[in-house]
Image 1 (cartoon, helix red, strand yellow):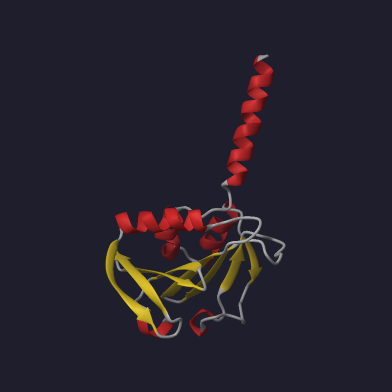
Image 2 (cartoon, rainbow, N blue to C red):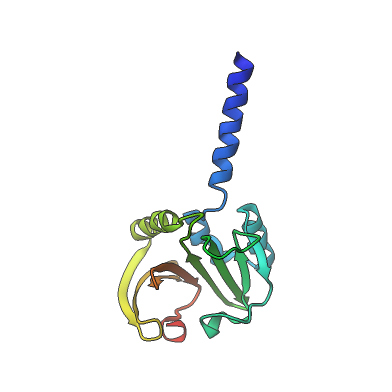
Length: 171
């Protein structure tokens, strides 16, 4: 009887860990700008994110051209939600763009909501502004000379983290 209970508990823990393996924790949001490329890729692999493209050509924002593209889905299927991460580490300039999509398989809006709440409570909120490029409001935060931006593009939440101010250049 004890063996069955122990076996059931072990399976429950494994299933629980696997179900949360592809969400992003706030600690990643806070620390992603401090990584160099090999450490960034290692951290993403631990979180079960896969490199889909080494040097992205098709990007929404030209500033992200050449970024490494990570995704939590190895096989991308239309209609399924994903967390997409674009990361550009170019000398001293570092930018990470995280997109939380919704779909029939997963809904990452809860993950975004949790991260946004932590950003609001831990980071210093600065003045929001209207993006001319994306025609949406951009909420901004800063802490320790790292800049955090959140906005929605067609109801898809996006977080952008940079080690320098990209208000004019990106938005």
